[in-house]
Image 1 (cartoon, rainbow, N blue to C red):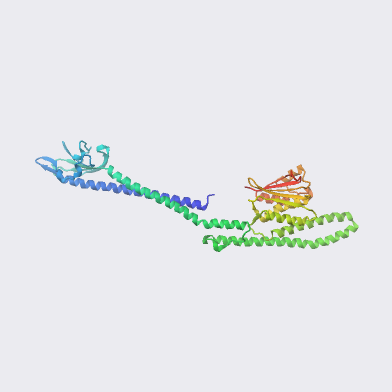
Image 2 (image 1 turned 60 degrees about the vertical axis):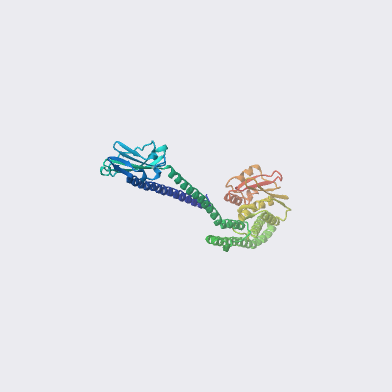
Length: 442
């Protein structure tokens, strides 16, 4: 999904471009209309001047050149006039050997149009029909002006305007990008703070250092952290209380088993095994509660620290064995993309299983190739090949009584499915026992 900053940049840039183009079109239209109006105004003035220069004497019509502007003298000067009378045509010297194709107009009728003139240039023409009372004969007088010079000036003005507008457009787009980058800088800083929170470096967001618009969000997030912390603390306390509460009934049951041993040794041995199993379960849950008790709700699992804590705790639980727990973590990997509590539950169950069945060695290796992979191996008896297939079946739940490797595997599978972690069971080629691989989604 496109980011807010990118979306704002695109929208604001689009609006600025549209506004600039609209302004350029409007400016061109207004400039073109002003240019056209100025040409027509000049032609009207030229028409009046030529009319004043028309003389009628002794039955002859002529134009007094002394009353005309000198612009009409140079050949192809760009200013022209032409008087069309029945059987006669008077032209300005500037037309030289060229003539204007003029349509005869009725008295008082005017015509404005453009056509090709001398040197094949575009010219603007204005014609006026004269009455017989004015010249004794019907006539049409026309004045014209070359448009090439005016259009050149028009192009220069519009080109300058276009260059300035494009420069301003680039400046505004650059300003938009810089302003948005500066405006979203606090958001990026907040992201860094959230990363620290996730890695457990801080316990809450400092609201005073967050922009005013984001302060309500930060406050709500802090409240959620407090609520989640209390929920975790309550769950830990309940787990601890339950485990401690079971110790007294178990102690009573232990006494009854010892008494039963005098009467029925076989039954006493069977019950003693079950009591030992319950004791170990309680010890594991108490150890997990101690490890995860003070974690942050948003914290991710840190490596190798959390793995070392798990190994140390499990070494105490399985104190009757001398287990060497080796941990190998790349230097650039500092955490796993999983909530710390879930990670401790997930890997803790697998490590507990490895410690339970290992003879003397447990190995934890993390690799970072196309996604993080955590591999847990032991040098125990391992699992038969046909039983490996059962372990990897989706939704298959095995308990310790069935397989000897099933205690907690149902929880492991649930957490792995929740985080889309690929779970694989196979034989350990180096240690000879069970090898469990957890591959996190890239």
